[in-house]
Image: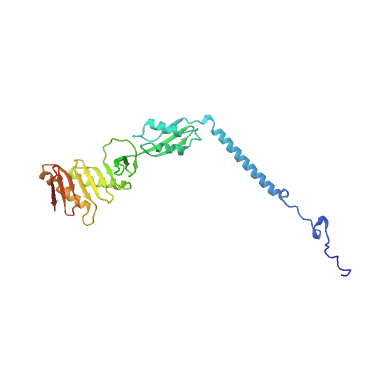
Length: 276
């Protein structure tokens, strides 16, 4: 090692201990004013929101905002005043702001004749209720359980008490709309006879059976391309005036499942066939 070489491992040190004589800038959160200002602003916003929420909650719970009135805006035919009062008192807790309208809606829709319910607030203390009632078109008799329900014009089943004069349906639970349509269709075809469908049955194999208001049971069977159901029923309707004059006893069963004719049974169990 010569005299012109510095001692091994030694480096010139500048002021403040920074190599090369340049000062190192201070670092860290407390030396960053822009960060501190950003956090301070965020804390102010959070505090303001929290305080506003607390004030709103406190104000909305004041007794001055209690519910004053329940107004039903739709005409009602089936739902009674007592049922409305029960649904309201059992579900509408709190004041004008805190009452749970969704819970109240479900309570009104649980009433026997209510299909849909809508509720809304009206300042200063009114809750408006609009109800859509079921329009029953038939009784639905379950062969499996023996229970009887009602079916509305949408093909939906519901539970309610009724003594209305309506037809009785029996069939698959998802066939409500189809049976409503078929009942009207059969009545249209039977119009010339003056008879009407009072009971309609659809089996699991899609075989139809109808009972008429004169007590006659008609076995229609399944619709078939080779022997369409409408064609078989129309053939029987065309022969109906002659059948009435031919038998002095009441026809209790008409079997239309034959491809080219039909069979009838009278009150004395006499069975005869008509073929065309």
